[in-house]
Structures are given as structure tokens and as C-alpha cells.
Picture 1 (cartoon, rainbow, N blue to C red):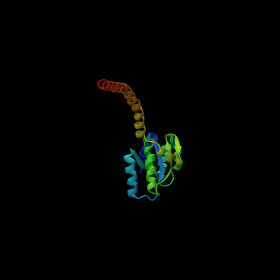
Picture 2 (cartoon, rainbow, N blue to C red):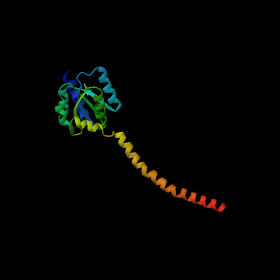
Picture 3 (cartoon, rainbow, N blue to C red):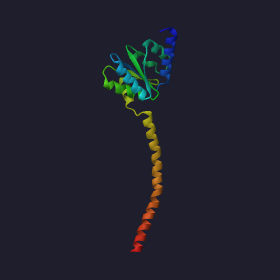
Length: 171
């Protein structure tokens, strides 16, 4: 790899570290090509990505970034799983780690916050952005449904009272 290619890789990694909601660092020693493709497919399905990069270049890209604290994790054969959604990459990494013991999560970063192994696991258990949006929409919609029910209730009560009075008058 010549100098221009290295500079391009450092720039790409810098953008990843800056724009990602979460970055998970893991060792992948012994993973087969099929397993790595499976990991990439899972990440893609969750709107995330997987990147293998030279540790030295990744450390250079981390300089001055909010998540620079993860530089210590970049030793050995490391792979980065990342996503804009602060939860997606952590969920993908955790789920994949359960399927193979050759994928070992070391830690990661969520913005400026460094995450250890337990931190990544905790983030993976949080609801995703889509789940939170659905929950908020449900909370916003519920009062409107209750108001509509309350407004409609007196009319139906009056109608049933009038029907009862009518039935008694007819008898």
C-alpha cells in the first residue's frame, strides 16, 4: 500500500470514527470467510458496517476524534463494527459473538464515551432508534384515542338511555 492509499484509508476511518453513533472493536482470529461474510450481512441488514483496517492506520485516524480512547483496544487482529444508530452495531456484534467463540468483543465507543465489554453488552440491550420512535408515536397517539373515546362516550350513553326510556314508554 503506497502513501496515497494509506492517507485515503486514514481519511475514511476518520469519517467512520466521527460520524458513527457506536463503534465496536473485536478480535476475529480464526473466523472463516463465510463467517465474516455473515457478520457483514448482519451489519448491512441493521444499517451498519464492518471494517477491517490496519491498527496503525486506525490509531492515526483516531487522533483528535471524540472516541480516541479506543486506540488502546487496537492490538492484534481487530475488526470494527459501526453504525450511525447508537445501538445497531452493538446488537449485531453481540448477536454474532453468541454464535462463535472466535469473535471476541474487546470494547468500543459511543461518541466520546469509551465502552468496555460490559458496556457494549449494555448498549446492545437498549431499544433501537426505530423502536424508540415507535414507542414515542404510540405515546403521542394514545391520548388522542382516549380523547376521541371520551368525546364519543356521552353520545352513546345518551343514546342508550333514550332507547331504554323509549322501550319503557312502549311497554
